[in-house]
Length: 237
Image (cartoon, one colour):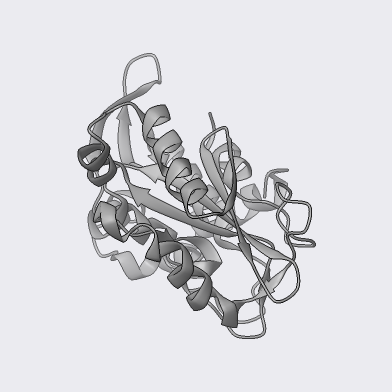
């Protein structure tokens, strides 16, 4: 599965509310802290917390989202629920919120939770991820104001840079080598500073991976122009 397909699985259009609950609406980012507090209250017994990713990780008052994507650490939940099977863990997470009186649905890789608002509801999409605290850093963005690019474009750019160097980028695992058949092989790194150096060059740091703009600025002009052209030509972007 290509990276942008993963993003399509966990991201919904923000022209309207999330598409799982009929009354889900767009909500202002000023509500994100209270929405997170509500759902994390019921995660406390597990020792885990729900970590926002994407735009929800750096909320901006006045900006709206149609859902809130969060990740939770698979290892912590596995230990708490005494199972290492992801489907069973997700079912038990769903059960926590069902028992607390929330409307929930489990679809594909996500557990969806309906959080009531004054008008309508917010849709929270929970994804089970190994090493969630570290992986969440992959989804922190530093996007300039009025940028034409979003977080998904940064991920696609990183994937293209990895592919061009014979590697593979996973937004939920890290940077991998490829085997002789071009398939994912051993993990190269899940450290953003190391990943930046592998994708951009020895002088690069994690800060250079904050946005498409910062990636382009860190590349030599020829590589930057090529990457920009590839993004513009990619229908997924």
